[in-house]
Length: 383
Image (cartoon, rainbow, N blue to C red; front, side, top):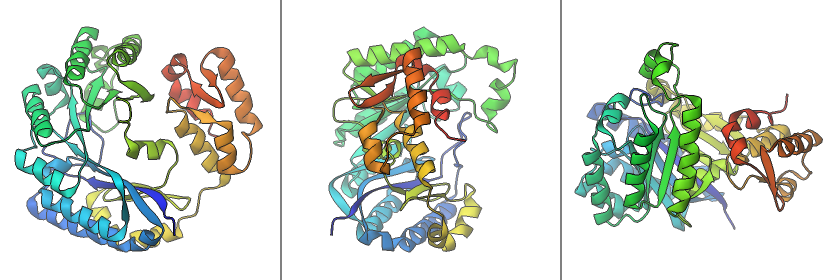
């Protein structure tokens, strides 16, 4: 029996200190709270054991929070349980998010022993003043030590997260950050523009009319973005998604599952899933999640599948995030029909305006289109 490909996300909601811009479900935790969380997480995973007869695991992603903050034994126990349920691909991509200042030689050796093949390091900036503004727990020296330890431990697939359009950030500072990081030659770089999220300390400080004067202008933000693409291309990194750049063959396979409408299951607080045509999400609050675990699989079973229209919308919305774009033949294979007439008209209009372009059978956003990508992608959500 050929099993269907599945990606697995595991949420670890613990961090040393909440960053000032972060709206992810994460917070510090005591040893007792961490142990209790992982007991319930394992219970949730076991309840989905029936999926093991249908799916094989292609990728696993430990996100957070800060997965590298907790004792590696917990992550190893989760992987052992997952391997007992799902047949892992021989080349399964297993990613662990890690923050500088939380890694040690012993932890990295443990990750290697349990099969972690990819690290994602949250640097954000090489400038100490910018790291302090963000509320990060580390300095650049801490990051550099963590990066060197990871290389010494044998990790040859490392992503570095960076953030532009920070308060008081200049083009020169952003260029220094990117030039410094590219000089380390990681396999992958994620370069995101800061988004001020509601409910965060940043929203109180920089979300007001007075606070916005400390943020780079929209024009400066776009200048940073376009320079990033040009500079990283010169250094051997190709942009394959709006904010992600990789050396050849080093794209994040797990995230590509999301952007190509592949199937994935998420375990843990706030984790989202798309399995068997059904999209569902766990509660975001820690206590709510712990109480929800006994009914998690039942919730999956009773969730209604997406309609054809909803699946078509997601294909367009997510596919346009990637530099591959969307394709007529691929659409027909997935849904048994050609692009709806409304889609054809919109794509033709955007091509005429220079926001989209045709490349063989594919339609994708141009650089101008990426600048207003949120508006364009939302236009493919049918009323």
